[in-house]
Image 1 (cartoon, rainbow, N blue to C red):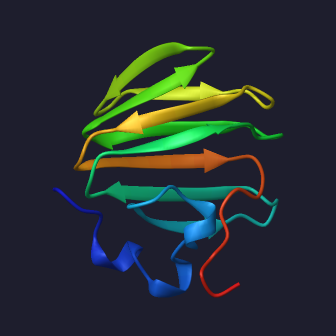
Image 2 (image 1 turned 180 degrees about the horizontal axis):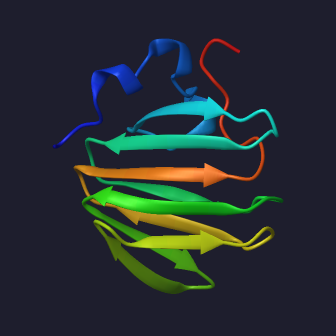
Length: 115
C-alpha cells in the first residue's frame, strides 16, 4: 500500500496546517484521557523543525524513511522501525517523499482544521 485507506482520512479529522509540517497530510484521533493517535502521509520530502513536547511520543514508520534528529544525532528509521521520545526531549526530523508514519502522543499534539 502507498496510502492509508480512505476510511482513515475523514476530513473531520484532518490536521490543521499550523499543527503539522509543510507539504504533508495528517489526521488525528483523540482518546478520552487526552492522548492522541495521528498519522501522516508525506508526498514530498520535508523537514520537521526542532521542537519539544511535555508528553510522551511513540511513532512507527509505515513506509519510506524518517530521519529523527536528537542533539545533532541522526537516527534513520525505515519501514517497521519505531522510536519512543520522552517528554522534554528536543527533536526534529526529515523524511523522503512517500513516507508514512503513525504516532501516539500522551497529550494534545495536533489540532483539527475545523477547530
